[in-house]
Image: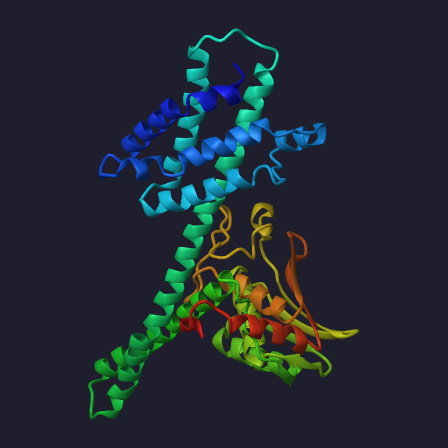
Length: 397
């Protein structure tokens, strides 16, 4: 008997084993039969349909390499996507969802084998098609599960960050008012000053989290471009970093005025993140260079530092969120108020202006981040702002 026909004829015994396995996983809860079976029958029926569909040589080759597609797998993917979401809601973790598919595969093949059907030339092809269908279903389930988890996490971070602002502002304002309420001991004044400083650090971290969740929820980085001189901003940032790090050699080269339409506050944030990153990840003896030049219709900003290069494995994911560089030979201290989002936010800011950011790093030349900004980015920024206004929750505004 062909495998697809066997699954059709023995659907109930297969579903009973699925149900029993799911009950073992969720032994701490009293789930009914419908919940335990969930979309198992739909997955089986879609698997049968997929196995019986025509398959060309090119499609067979593509699926053997994990490239699933076409209309025949639509039902299979739909059932698997919903199954993963329902299992997440029932408290199953991802490994338990994956184990269900492993158990389903083993159950079907074992029952088919135990019936002792005479071997046939089509058996290998049947098992291959079955495995392809299960693999596609499993891939869809994992993708659906992780996507929903990511969305829930990002929404939670957005709400948490937003709601933390009010009590933090209250703490900061109370600490700043204490010295004005009457004579205080020097120790009390120092404590109030420390509270204000720490509140400022927390506010920057919350701001980074809000920026992160805006981009993760599909809004892009909101920007409000206006005519400005980028050279003036670079001079301003240079003075601030020289004052904050008097023991470091921080150099600026910006020979001519470079004007364009950009969001001044966002560019300040992006360049400041790169400057802070350069100071954090280079020895005290290495200078940090901030350079600005105009090139055709673009503004080019570079931030360079000497010292140990970024490791090749880290370079490929340097702009990923919540990733910090590490090296056994060159341990890297965390910057105050940093949660590993600085470079991610810098890239989001530059891309929201229609620009690009790149990095090169070597032992001989050091590390250089290069920002390329079109001088007229109002149209691109308007599209980003329009998207931001369509966020699913106004709480992020």
